[in-house]
Length: 334
Image (cartoon, rainbow, N blue to C red):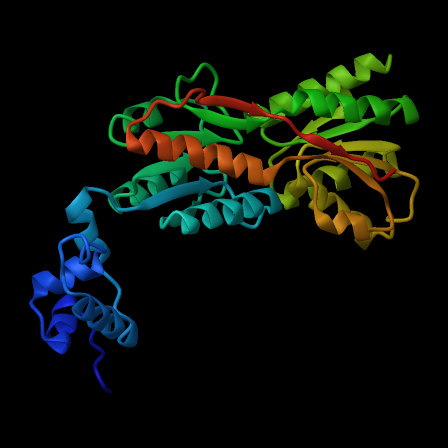
């Protein structure tokens, strides 16, 4: 088998008949500035294109003490919200000449630190994390080495920078509307109760009921985790307990609703009279026979805010506001 060989700057210099130093100046964009002849510059650049020359990232790291790489840590990449955020952030990184490395934790705090340490060992310049941890102590320590930004979830009283979407206000607006249509029975399916998204969405749920004049019943609150399987299991147990589907339901995330819809499809419930609302939107909801009202996050804005704050911190600049709550909108289909 033929052994491949990566083209180096020395190879380009030899082919162009110039010194390695001259080739380096041209390929680093400084040839004209340092008066390398135009003909020589054009010859070096043409050969670089012809042979698909790419500069070594390791040499670049040694030159400016940066890897030009960001790390993103999410609980689950198959979750629609995190997948959409990852895609938006990767586009921003690519446009800025940065590489994005993505790791998943599966909502496991022990695994989270393992993937974080792996990214740090790869010398990322900064981290964006949707954390499953309840304490910021590890990240505060890590932030002494490199910038760390929390997103989607905040840890109580942390001084670390974070960016989240407002969950309380739009959830209250949505649930109030739901409660006025079905005031005698509305269930809440949530994720881990200690995580800030669950707490905020439950607070909005409670506020919405209060505004509609509906008294919250403890049995209406059911919590598990944010995996689709948890949504399936919670909804299946609820239907079994009631002997029927609930009259109205609010799910705290897209993944939970995915599990609910799978159960409903399997049991031919998609044409039932249940009213459903959820935090997080998905384009496929427009294609369903059952209407679903949602709170829609502005994912491009969320990614842009995270990118701007983290890159500012990497440059050594202090952001004007390093803890942001972004607005959301309602998508009404009912």
